[in-house]
Image (cartoon, rainbow, N blue to C red):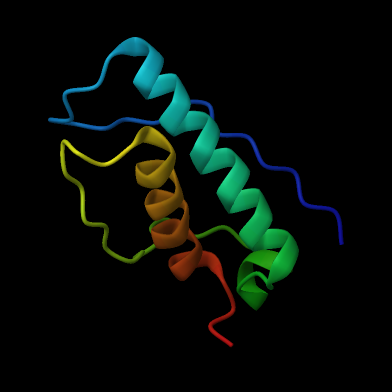
Amino acid sequence: MKIQLHIERLVLDAMPLSRQQSAAVHTAVEQELGRLLRAGQLNPHIASGGAMPAITGGTIQASNAASPTHLGAQIAGAVYSGIGDGK
């Protein structure tokens, strides 16, 4: 199966991040979500080409002390919990 991942825009409301930190979070989300998708499986509905109007993901623990890489990895894990196959 071929998976193409592109995150055009990542919105982080109320997060006091610099432009550089925001870019690092974006990169970390793409990298970690790609890793999770390669290691796991997609929800069968998504894998068959279906669209979903909304996805309920997991939660994250955001703090000002969290590194952009750690924050991005948490976001990717939360997204994957909504699109993974749950196995």
